[in-house]
Length: 75
Image (cartoon, rainbow, N blue to C red):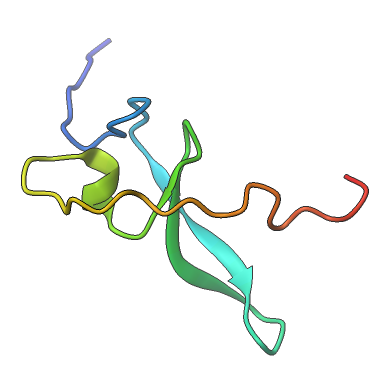
């Protein structure tokens, strides 16, 4: 098995992937929000450079969204 190293990974947990956060717009349609979420530690961010922490990345802290957003009442 071949193991590959990448600099493109979460600077907090080491996960190598992230997903767009999907939300409903004013009409109720599901749309990307412009925010992304790490598949490992679930930290949210708007710029992938913030996620992978490469030198030269923006100094702004990753965006933290409400962890309960998108859950239905009583869940």
